[in-house]
Image (cartoon, rainbow, N blue to C red; front, side, top):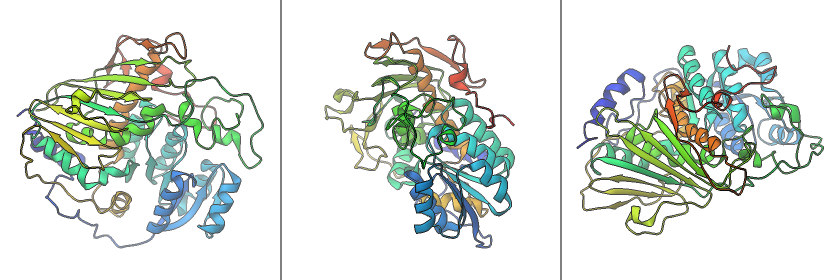
Length: 448
């Protein structure tokens, strides 16, 4: 079978890269034997997903500092949850002032500030946990992995269901050849669930509690718009977010990526509802092409958002869930409804599930803490897993950019973007340079 030997190759790769979680079926991952000293934690972003991330950090160490651009949210967190932590609005000032007291940093901001905060922390030798998607752009994802390797820091992206046992088991079954030769992967989501595909709102005064210039961070200056950016709807804007794809694909593509090593696509093409290159389109369908890799055959992956879904024919005539994935082989199809392969996984085809080996996780955040203490790397570490996954996902947005057409409401099929993953550039489409690699405003550092 075309991917039956993939596990052997994966084990060899894991030994070199430190991914190493396919080691023993049902065995708890090894804990570090290092002293159980308290870790000096700091959190950038303490609301939304940052609330749970900062809570995990506080349970795993001493919360030295918290940072948020909203004074009200910052004050509430300090009073109710982190009374001993020093407070900051600017992560740069926090790291400059308290760098010697901080061992590890969580980053839970809008996408455009992930890399600036993460890169600064890692260049100072701090371990880094960063919410998904790891970055807003492809170049930032590659650079984050490189800096993590150079600095030898423990890293993890916040795609928490990487630690989920059903996902690991399903990935192992695919690697063991249960589906035969895999030729297609289909992934769909109910996002966006925020306004997208329209014009900018009228300029307005930001709330007194919000430091708007710090919220903009490295992005180009624009006026505040009431209800359009802070605290949630930023995902639909090119300068700040990465659309439906960036929001959910690090979750929904995660299990297929885990199983099939879906890195370094060679082309990507999108059909969209059209857009103005300021706000993402209302919907998109994106087709990726992957070359053969090791014993895995060449295959395509199709992403659907904005109400578009896989055809029921692909999943045995079933009505697709609002989100999910389907991995299609020549012997059977695996259908995983839900964002995280967290629901009952369905096998369509007359095959017997093989006995597989996989390692149970001690818990997603606990994997990062274990790595900080000198144990095994978190599975979703930046250099070997989260970075390549993020690069693959964000490549789809290059195709979406090309498929702008005549603007919102006018469906457009964009040109196929041929991709050179080694050099991070298209070999046939020009004008994508700042979509691949952003230009930061003065005061924020991308390349050291």
